[in-house]
Image (cartoon, one colour):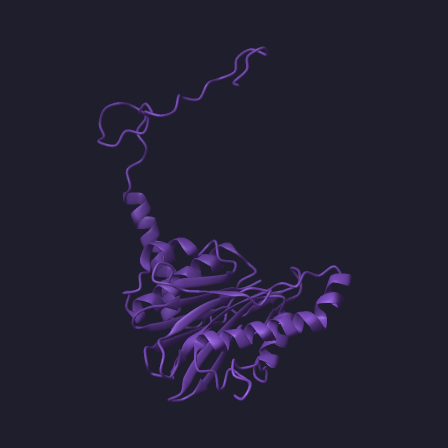
Length: 276
C-alpha cells in the first residue's frame, strides 16, 4: 500500500509520497510514487500514484506520449507537453488510465484482480493558476477547491485529522510541508504498509519550476525531529487535559450530566426484559 498527499495553497503546492509497496508481509519493496514533469518557464506538473503498481507504472509510461483530440480538428492533438490548461492535461491522464484499462482490464479481471489505481495530479501551466486534481481508476477526476484544499490517496485515514485541523488555503508553504510530514508520521506509526523513504516537493506559485525536492530516509535530521517532537508534544497535551470526573464537585467540566435529548442507557436484569 502507500500514502500520498497533495496540497493546494495560495502560496503554492506541496506533494508528499512514501515508497513502500507490498504483496504480503514477506514481499516488501521500494518504488517511488512521485513523478515530476517540468519545462521551466512553461509548465510544472507532479503526479502521485497509489493502488496496483503495475497499473500505475503503465499509466505513467503511457502518459508521456498519450494524446487526445483537440476541440478543433485543425489543431494538433493535446498532450501533457502542449496542453494549455491543467484541466486538459488531466484529461490526457484520464485517457492514459482508460487506455491501460482497455489493454489490461479484462486479463486482470480474469485473474481476480481489481483495476485499482488512484492518482493526484497538480501543477501550473503558464497563463493559468495552479490546479490540483484527484483522478480515479475510471479516468474521471475532481478538482481541489478553497473548501477542500488537499487530496490523499492510499492509507489516508491515519493522517487526515491533522490536515483537517491545520490546513487552510492561507497556510504558508513551509507550515503546510511540516503538516504533511506530521500526517505521514502518524501514518507510519499506525500502518506497516507505508514506509520510508519519502519524497517531498514544494512548488511556489508562478515559479513554473521547482528545486525544493528532497528524499527523506531514516537518517534525515528534520524528519527525525518531527517524529520525536510530535510524539512528545502529543503526550504533553494529552496529560494536560483533565481526567473525566464522575462526581458533581471539583470540576467545571463534569462528565456525567443528564442529556437534554436522550435517555440514559438501560440495563437488562431479567430474561423477559426488552430494550425495544
